[in-house]
Image (cartoon, rainbow over all chains, first blue to last red; front, side, top):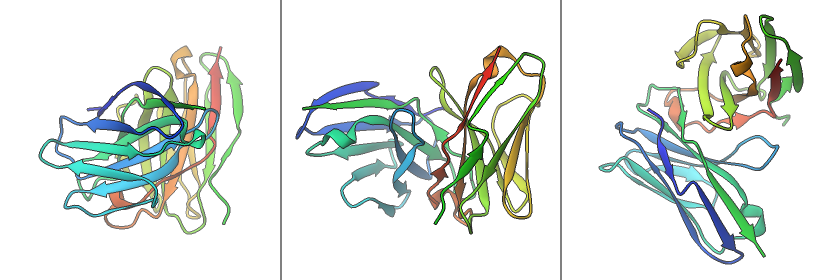
Length: 111
Length: 116
């Protein structure tokens, strides 16, 4: 099943914060976050693993609630460059090489 | 390090034709995944290859197939094209080693396929 992202879209002014959520009905092993700008390929932001391990960009923070099968991406002090569509991709096991992506959250940062 | 390359970048075909798309992963990456991206469905997983073997397959009809060569380059084929196959096809490469879901994926620029 495709994870559900919320909100579907959000508009921020520079400097404001935002939270993007990703929920799954299946038990999750890992959650990946990617950002895609219009006309460009998705770019890796962060991976969170069941058990607490994570890797990604220093300026991006995220959480993974294993009990609720939810992940949240925190964007603080937003900049114009943060604009784009954010996707979460989930996998159900360490041996799974398949990522199932949500439909995305469109983030627009305005001056 | 060169990124993921995909060819061609744009393609126009008519219904019933077939098409082959190519993806060259980052040097040293042995896993290639393919995705279909449409405005309505977002990114949908097609299949993943590692060392010339398909390890995972998404819920797409058999018209969609792929393969991987010994140099890790991958091709995707769609036969008997339908209007609904119009989409951006993205490939992504990763190390693909054990704990595969812990490897970040690096996406190529995509092939924009239009079926008339």
